[in-house]
Length: 338
Image (cartoon, rainbow, N blue to C red):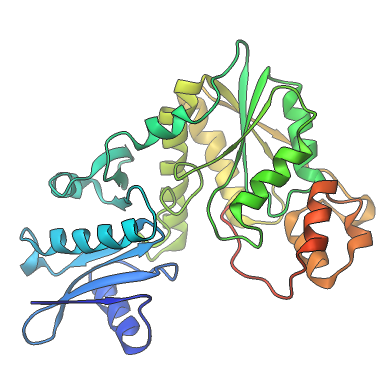
């Protein structure tokens, strides 16, 4: 057997991987940046695994080669790669029937549904992340999860409305690096814009909220099913591992007339969160006069076009200052949730 690595997989090898995974009932994820694969002595592809950042994806092994050392060798190579990139751990999602196999490879259960599970190669990842967050005060504790790419006056409106209904509000800014504005900059903009708001605690979302780890978007070829699985897994993890220890009893969102994925996510929150003692509060969006609702997609287009005068009424000063200092010419990948 021979191992080969690609960072990223391209050309004929990429097509070979797509065909291989399709034959196993899986879909390739275009976010993969590193792939390790195994070939038998004849050169035939028999197993593969990839990384999207430090999230393990697209693990596939031909049935005749399962149960041996191949998967362990692939995980060892991916772990070496993830550590070389500064990652403290690796996460993966897989089907529940594979839990025991991955536990033998050093992975621990984080959260699971009937159809999919999230695992991590350390037993206390969520607990360590929670230790970095300020402890909640007495009273009603609420939460908002937002990408803020960029932060708009619509986000500010949602925060101000939510503050009236709780004593402490966790504002989790999505840490995923799939936006025009890097995560660290988005976090700083939000902190500046909310600095004068008592009770608002701005935190990075880490790996455990609306991320490549909690949304198994490659897991099923049918995108509707994949989105359903992702919403359910993400929300169960939030309810069990985050809301419960932090005492969060309310989650706040704005209505979503533009993004089908975000709209579906909101609907899933309405259905799932109350089962775990978390109520969902949905507010109408802020309107921008006769121009419709304030939304990040419109703001990003105005930013690309350099129409900063129009942006003055749509974003807080911290966002406007950042956009003027960082003009953009085209649209890179966007985040998961606006």
